[in-house]
Image 1 (cartoon, rainbow, N blue to C red):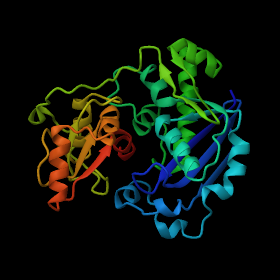
Image 2 (image 1 turned 90 degrees about the horizontal axis):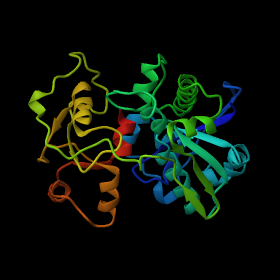
Image 3 (image 1 turned 45 degrees about the horizontal axis):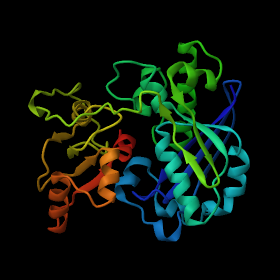
Length: 311
């Protein structure tokens, strides 16, 4: 199979704040060529949030003298145009690409794409979650998570492993086998990658008894962004159940919680609910978090994509 894997990193919660991108060209299932750039975000989006810096380690000083994406776009477009693009949690990468191109009024490129997160959900049962790190490690790959080069490469490896498991030799055959609709982008049009079951969420809004959860380890990484953090959830998650999400927080030395209080660090919103939040519709937890933020509390409201990228 020939395809190109892509991974973006952003400076902050704004999708247009791209600060790095990697492209990995797989030819006949092997890495053939790699390209990666540090990128200076558009001026109105160039604030580097400590939350994002903690995840990927890229700072403003790293990109101060780097080109903006509009300067290198002709090269990127020549690589990805009319190709099959692969990304893990592709909804994030596609939204980043569209957002930054919109800033510069650059037409969208033309390509098909597939999401290895969705492929993983349809391929490997009973995983605690389907993050790139978890699926990559489950398959035996050791890599530097949130390094765009490594993330893009592992997405390609996951796709190849899935094809082997399903006994197919092409991405089209894989999509047909697992009931997936391949995503598509072209100037003026975008269609998301979806699964035949209507992309039903794996999450739920049930109350979780936090006291019944037990961390899978007693040794934690104090540098992990969730270590020591109190994390609450609102709305319906797509990538995992709420209980599994809370378990993940606990496994990294964090404190999952059912309510938002003064010392809450993060309120994670399910993707569908985050879109409602952007439109002005708020859950009781969101209203509580915003009230506490207005009172000076350091609570960050993040969406499910951002939570997944943390882990």
